Image (cartoon, rainbow, N blue to C red; front, side, top):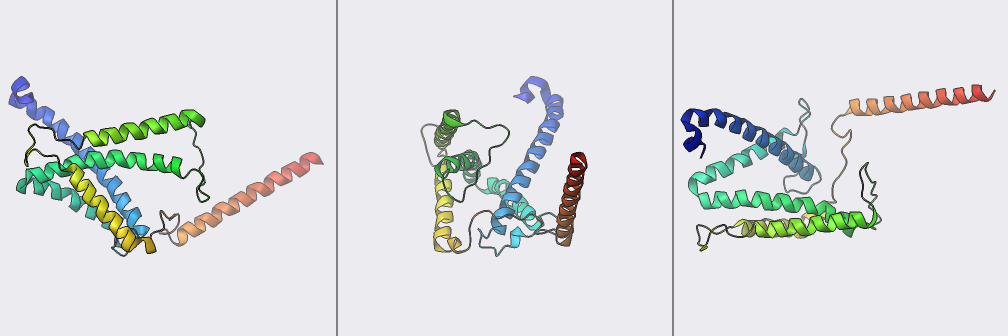
Length: 231
């Protein structure tokens, strides 16, 4: 369309900005996916023995997870050369999986609200009571509806070439993940784990002790001031 409207030169100029935008989007997606891979591996949710859950001591970043996600991101582009149908199915799956991932914490917030291990602390913006329930229910219902719509074929009549395989791939990935959890992962995967100071070594410990010393000094000074005011 751009080529027909503004010609070859105008299209190439605008396409530079499109490429820059796509590059920025890919970078943020790689960062988010790498952190997710790192966290799940760190919490022993993958059969990799925690390899992707390690932090490089020099860069203080999960390099193994970043490189693995980068490699995985390249595969769909290469897959498009062999089978555009399979590549389109993976691209369609990303939207469905991303939307469904949004409703998981919302649903868990409501289902496990009275669980003894849940200590929910509302943030600065919080909708209590019926308003919060309504917002959460609408979000879950609408996102589930959109995820179902995105699994429908986009062309009629539906053939093997025009079929939307996002639901098939999503079901396969979900089945494999649940099977892995039931057979083995449930033995050592206990959910997200905190890692504050875990990979920072002695510096984190010394900084933490220094912070406690500062708190004690401030508390002592406040106590002295109150004693002087009373006297």
